[in-house]
Image (tube, rainbow over all chains, first blue to last red; front, side, top):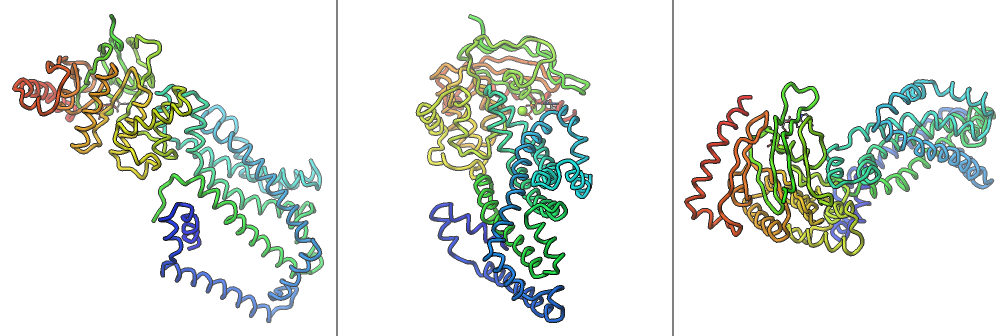
Length: 278
Length: 253
Ligand SMILES: Nc1ncnc2c1ncn2[C@@H]1O[C@H](COP(=O)(O)OP(=O)(O)OP(=O)(O)O)[C@@H](O)[C@H]1O
Ligand SMILES: [Mg+2]
């Protein structure tokens, strides 16, 4: 349903005929929107009712969680910690893409590179994150670098495997077409291979972002590096459960904000040539 | 003056196959000549064009294009458009490779789009076009660079009868008007007789040139005039009889 909403919203870019359609909320869409909001309402109600049966250090109600959130906001803690976590995460995310995109394309194109990098990718894919965290603690200590390194190591295989798959699924006929016009390798890379990989890049990017969130928080939690993960661990030690809930919901909010504020608009631009389901 | 395109004893066997696809093909296409290559499905017609375009290597034999600056355009059996480029930019792809830039590129693309009757569709993506329109975009991409050698692989197969005959006339005009050398692969005897100076008939796999026929109708042709000509019916049935056993052979494997 939310997907459909997005289609309506992005359709608005598509000129006057689209604009008219975007403004018209079809009855079916309205029903689905209502169902969605109802589900949220039910969850919220369950939370309120549940909180009456449990003490605040187990299940605080919305009010204490909200108070904790606004207090963190007022003291500037929220902004500072969120900034630290986003810094870790997006640095790691950027490094992952910076390495994974060219690596994936090279692996997909040349079997020599594939065989050379296979062992590393399998290792990174299978080694438990907790072991990576311990290794990072030993090698780089409890610094931001450690968190970033662990996040990159965990994200790299997910992202790279998607790019490899995309590179392998490229339409050879298009490459032959380019060759018949005497296109060089660079042109083929730029005009055919990279655009072909875009859908896989986006799919990989989305999975990787989820992994990056989890591993960054986990890393901060265990390594004691400033950021949301560390705040959660501190709050648990102080039995400040409302803060734990506040942070948890903050991450949910940030994830959604990023999905709709950045990811989907970028996706809409990059896939604008594709046929959309009407 | 030597021919522009020469194939001599070309054999092509794909790795892992037990029998070659092409078993010694020799053919020549003179400058400004339009030669049709006709034969049953699977006999290796596209393979001949792939070899000429430099996309696959011959197993043995020689291939020459006697012009170092030849501009080769290959219009494939399927459109092979870039899905992420609009029509205009797809047509410009060939021009980019030929280092035509700026306003000249835009003008050449527009002219080619007009030739294939797609003006007004420049800003559509391939998936917004019908199969026949996509094939015409591919043709425009091939024509835009004003090639000296034009390789055409059943370029009109996806078109309806009326559009096809319009495009055939257009192609004839371009080839005659610019002195383009063209090798046209086709299934269609009428198309071959309408367009070509010579028709080469291929045997079923392993492919050889089985027969060569000079088309005696001069350069000013139209389908209407041909249909009046008793000679046309005679040649047409001659070709049909040449092809028939090959098609039967191919179907029986
Ligand atoms: N790259 C390739 N690898 C292996 N076999 C190939 C390859 N390309 C073509 N062939 C084989 O060569 C034979 C001739 O193929 P080709 O495409 O040249 O036929 P064609 O005459 O163009 O047929 P059609 O009229 O159906 O297009 C076929 O049996 C095909 O399977
Ligand atoms: Mg073919």
